[in-house]
Image 1 (cartoon, chains in turn yellow, brown):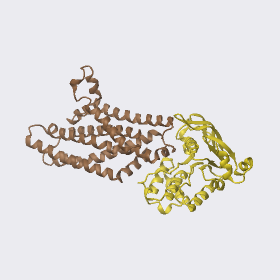
Image 2 (cartoon, each protein chain N blue to C red; image 1 turned 180 degrees about the vertical axis):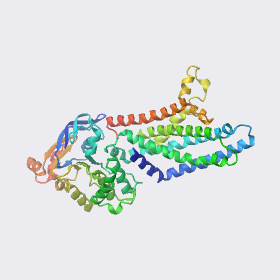
Image 3 (cartoon, one colour; image 1 turned 45 degrees about the horizontal axis):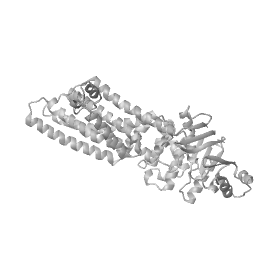
Image 4 (cartoon, each protein chain N blue to C red; image 1 turned 90 degrees about the vertical axis):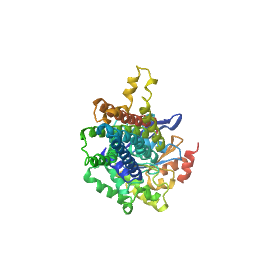
Length: 237
Length: 244
């Protein structure tokens, strides 16, 4: 469903991503792991169609986001780091706006909004302005925005950052519940989280892929048992 | 497009900014109407269209110059600061719909601010009949001019994530298009018609006196369209360079 082939992205003289390749199959939940500044967000932005790669190719549901941007965007729900939204809009108003932009038919919109409100546990704050919500709720509003319209592919950029432990568990359960019927690329630098949620892990460091496989496979390859040690081995320069 | 316009209108009509600016505009426009009317009554001798409404439209034009950049500066700069612009780019929406939606919202807001000023001619009509034709021309010109200001402000708002920079540069560009023909003697005779053709404010003269010149209408519509097109180009450039 997602394919990245020899992708390089340069910002001026800085090479944020240097010739990476990986794929995410249908129904898979893949963890995208790496230290801060490794190129995770840059890669996810290219997959979400925000900007094109400097070289190499990206495929989303078999299509090229450059040639067929609207079809690719329709297939993807994107959760950006920091979960930006409009502080003055109410949660329901904001999600209604998202549903319209995602081209859901008028009749399906309120049901779609109600569904993501329930899925993300934010029904009780639906009438409140986003700006008055706590960080955890805002994060869930961001997740609701990505889930809205039931896109087959979800690209989630650090969805659990800044949440308290109980909320982290809830989000993980939510993502785990998507296994099999949604394709998910999930970035994090929290290892236990990736182990708990993902079928497979892609490890990126300094703009390059340094490891790929199930947590067990990676561990076996490096002779380590704990994912922490595997990770530290892989990202060490 | 309408979804974007509706969201923008919600933000405008729930923000203090809109009510503050509308109040400032209407209070000042009302005061100007009072002084213009006083001037007209005291010194008279001129016909109503030239003597009163010309000054009134002239004054409202200056007010709009101050007002519109304050209304438009947040449109894209705020989205960029919040990070919502890149989120909008992941929805199946074309850039042209985003830009058109925001511009449409601007037009509605401007109409909402200008509409109450119709109270002046309506009130005056009870004492002395008002010629509605020339008045319509004046309002058409004022609205087109405001739309041109808004398009310019929208473009500059798309270039930065700072509302202040967006507003300040909109003033710069609009003032330039105003003062471009101030000292006609400073320009050689051959170039003057070219500068005049580009002067945004000279285009308002005929409207102000109650006439409609299709060349002026075309100019103002083109001015707005050009800046909306620049906005789209700015998005494309930023995207290819991978900037937010």
